[in-house]
Image 1: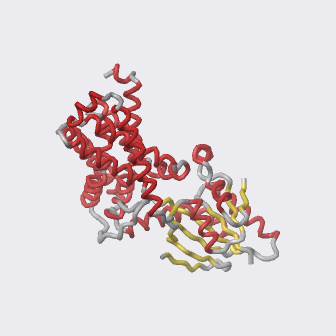
Image 2: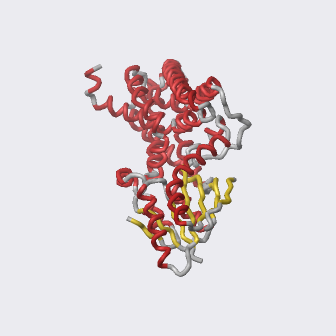
Image 3: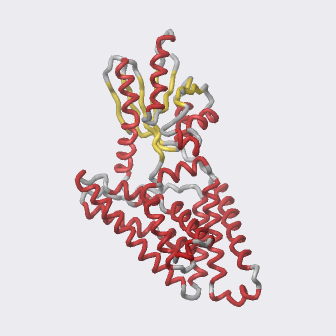
Length: 249
Length: 142
């Protein structure tokens, strides 16, 4: 374990896991923060605590599940293709979903359930990315998960601000996911004879996959380029007499 | 009447722009029409809306926005000046410029620094982006 900590490769892999986690789990952090808003004040902290605990536990189980699944033949191929798509999706601008028919949860366990169900649905991309980046190394996986959990819980605004200031981060993230997908493809048992015969494939495939994500992502993004307008939430007036009239829409 | 827009984020630095406008009212022949704006980052993306109802999301933005506007509004309330206040959701600099355009404001007065000078150093200030994007004069208050 200690030797591992001093190897450069280990830290490169940890860095990959953190970047993937950060870019793919902002939504989860927002759900955690918002799900407990309608609880009585006394229960909010509890709700967040249980929700985060449950979500973390679920995340760990799912990640290990993904790692063991990926050991099966063909599944790495499927996983790699999924990852390529996840990378492209990251580059594409947000699509607005219609509002679902969701009721605000006003009970502790309802809020906790929302957090955990949302985490289950929204962390599949993340789990797959992390599992691929860890390449089956369990201690790396645990280490990466532990580091990224606090990041996930408190970073959603920071990530937004960083992406606004340095838009290339989103492309770097997409390329990273492509690269990791390529690494997964190369390690697919199916292609083993091919890769062993042609050693350069070890770096060539990941690089090609990274470029592929960038090109396809850019191309699709250009086709759907619609700029999101800011939404006005509150409009109010205060007249000079000090009287007030206002409203929100 | 001159329309002045003051984007604020609730920080003391941002509110200095409000002080400046209040002080400058005396120099003008006619009190300007003042628009306060706070922009909330659009935290809740499409996926979040699958799990959280829109009303809860809007409540959150409203609460954060009103908190950010509170000090600036108190300053203006004390002077008895008329003003309008708004909360938008989006990317701050872009939402500020969009609002300025929609309301046809004549000038944007804002602090050169926002919530933290450390994060400005790393992330660049909203002010510099607004100065770059806006079609109207931008007055930066130190």
